[in-house]
Length: 481
Ligand SMILES: CCC[C@H]1O[C@@H](n2cnc3c(N)ncnc32)[C@H](O)[C@@H]1O
Image (cartoon, rainbow, N blue to C red; front, side, top):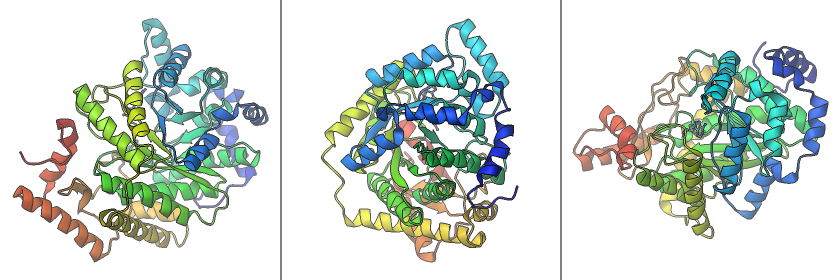
């Protein structure tokens, strides 16, 4: 099938759907009409798009964890604990890694093993294997909206089952769940597979059911410059809107310098409104991810990182913030640690409830730079696609016009080298083939030269390495000593 940024006909969608629902036995329980009925009977408090719209209206930043374990009862217990003890406003179900690779046999084995061992032998909730009815058990046990969080290049069957199961929000996208999550999966293939997912959600919307979509903003979560993640987020928002998606949360992963991060949040919303202006009644919100890079092992220091992310989300007026836990450096957190990350975040959000980062020259300069860079990238993407953003995206990755730092995908050029400037803002040490103007390139060079001067070293690759480890070692900028 040829990749084009054009809304799929229902016939084409239904034809492919036959094959998707046969990928695992639980697919046969998906009945679209029945699922519409089920969603119509969901309590309003479990409809994610409604909750997000309300938060945006009231200028409130909601908090949401990541969480998922192998067995249904334990998963329900975990989510209840995070809702009650963690004060989570919104709930996830983080899907396990086997399911993300469509390896349902291994997920099945992991379920069996978890039953034998009496503890979760999977790093998430294997929703495809558990099926529609089990998803509904989870949804009905809780009183908050549920979102599917994962990292799945081919997420079609997972979407069918979890959405029929009452989840009202679906994370990911054809770029954000390929480039950082896969090595050998073609971009064209995942863009097509995610057109399917978005068309399914468009089909729900055509039947009066609101399902929110959230492209995965942080990408590799390692020093990703705002304009790089914004470009991917806006492309995925455009592709989703073309398939009929009406509720979209665009995301951004914290970099660590307050002015840059607030500028990133504000520019993301403003750019998205601009690029999506042709799509009527698309409800846009934003999500801020607390630091996605390496964490300190020490739990008290980890709380410092978590709180800084909470403060930035609040001052940047993000619609929601995805929390981290004091076990981040260790692995899948206990429910107690997960709840502690939520409560520390809630404390800071509440204390900053009536504050925002006042506009200032540095903030405006940062916003302007991010907007210029993002527009220069997206203009080239459209050019490469002769106006078709889907085709332009594939060619842009081939040309390195879109390029994500430290991504495993062989389809990613990998020319970018980001490093922090003297204030800790992320700059381009090497911008690869990103189509930046001389003014943009010089801006970054000057910022890094200034850091080099104050550290008595040339801006170089060692800076990049030092910055990757810096937060885990208790700082933001990876100083030489
Ligand atoms: C892109 C997401 C990375 C983050 O996703 C967290 N994460 C992954 N799996 C689970 C889980 N099953 N429960 C709680 N957090 C989880 C990791 O810690 C990391 O921060």
